[in-house]
Image 1 (tube, helix red, strand yellow):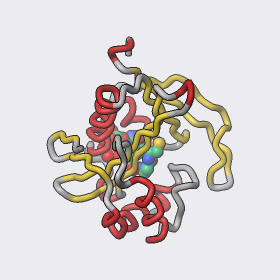
Image 2 (tube, rainbow, N blue to C red):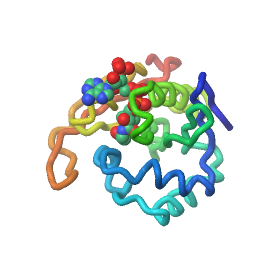
Image 3 (tube, rainbow, N blue to C red):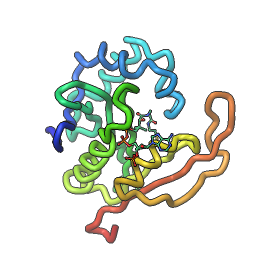
Length: 175
Ligand SMILES: CC(C)(COP(=O)(O)OP(=O)(O)OC[C@H]1O[C@@H](n2cnc3c(N)ncnc32)[C@H](O)[C@@H]1OP(=O)(O)O)[C@@H](O)C(=O)NCCC(=O)NCCS
């Protein structure tokens, strides 16, 4: 399974991605925007544990993002459970030296279309910490709608923050 647009390719994760993943992920400017499950420092053991869970998936929901043939980050859809199983949460990051080249905008468009067409997902959503303007911009460029602010819901780096919630609905279901 691979998804491609121009120089950006999404492909399944591999156990051999571990060292590169540490290079990309071991950065406080990345972890500050993500849940605490994405640690800092980000060690080789963290990468190995993560990859052991998310390689050999069927269907694939965690992808490596490649830019011009190089692994630069990851993107995922995590489907909900029970009555929320037609919804999925999107998550992503890329290494700092690749920011602001339009890479994640392309990756979000690719995985959103895949989620709607191949996984039968109807709603894709996520929450962005109030200070993460770049991520909100990505979602807006991809047609996600800001639908709520979960006030003071995030405790991150010893402070409390608002979370801005975005979603996009499968066009076949009125989105
Ligand atoms: C957020 C992140 C995924 C964006 O990826 P990216 O590939 O750099 O995104 P793109 O280049 O496609 O788009 C970024 C947009 O944000 C804008 N932007 C970046 N920093 C900005 C800032 N401080 N203020 C306003 N706009 C900003 C860019 O100009 C660009 O918009 P434009 O195309 O209208 O000019 C990336 O910075 C990242 O991995 N951050 C750390 C992890 C993270 O935040 N993950 C998401 C958690 S919700």
